[in-house]
Length: 383
Image 1 (tube, helix red, strand yellow):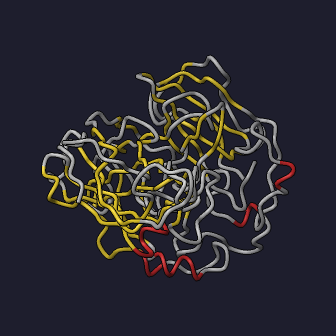
Image 2 (cartoon, one colour):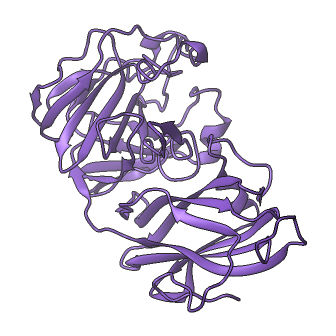
C-alpha cells in the first residue's frame, strides 16, 4: 500500500494513474433534519495512463486520523455515485485513458464528530508506470485530494408560509438536483447541490386533488413566495406562461433563459445569492435593483419553465448566475418537522399522486438551525 502524510502529500513520490482533485472549494458541513451533520462535494477523477483503469474502492478518511474511514464506497455504492461529465450514470467503474468521471460524495456524520480535514484513499487497477502502450493492470492503493472543511454557514428564514410543505428532490442522495452538473462559461458547476422543490401537502396527505393536468388541482399553486433574508434583487423574469402538469416541456424549447421559468435572484450579501424558480406569470412583485426585506412577498408559486408540476424550486448559490454558480448549504432558523415520506413509498406513486398521510408524525417537533432533507415534511408557520 502506498502511504501519504496527513497533509495529502506522499512520503515519497509514487506513480498514481488515476488522479483526483476537488471540483469546487468551500466545502461546508450542515445540520440536516435527521440529526446528522452532512458534508457534500465532488471529486474529479481522471485516468492519466494509457492502460485502462478500474476503480475498486474510495475511502473518505479523517485526514488527522487517516487510519479511520468516515465512509467507504465500493461495489454498487461506488458505481451509483459516479457520473460522466455530462451528468449521466455509468455502466461500470472503468475509466478509459484520458477519461474523466465525477464522483459524488455525501457524508452523514454524528454531531461533534466532523473532521476538520478529509482525505481520500483510492484502490484502483491501472498502469503501474508511464507507457506508450497498454499493459496488464496492477492493483494499487494511494491517497489523494485533501479537503479542508469550513465552518461558516448562512442562516435564513423560510421561502414559504404555511403547513405541510414537502421537500422533493432534496439533499443528499444522487438525484435530479444533487447529481446534475452543468457546463457553463468554461467550467462544470453543481448549482443545485442543495436545491429543494417545495410542494404543498393538503390535510388529507395529497399533493394533487382532482385533474392532474390542471395547475389548480395542486394545493401549493398560488402560494406566497417570500424573501428568506434582507437583500437586493439582481435579476427576475415575469412573462412566461404555466406549463401543463404531468410532463416536462419539449427539450427543444428550453434555453438558459427560460429553463427556470419566472424567477427571482437575490443578493443576500457575503457572496451568497438566493434563487426562486417557476413562479406564476405576472405574479413577481420585484425588479432588479429593488431592496427587499425578509418575509416580503416576491411572487406566487406556479408551474413555469422546466417543470412537470407546480412547486417552488429554491436554493442558495455563490454567484448571481443561476447555472454558472456553485450551490451552498444553509440553515433555516426555525420550522416544525411534521414527518417524512419513505423514499420507497414516494417512488411507487404515479407522478406525485398518492395518499401520503401516513408519513405525518404523531408528534411534530420544533427544529432550529437545520436544512430539510429529501422528503421531509415541514411547517413554516404563518398563513
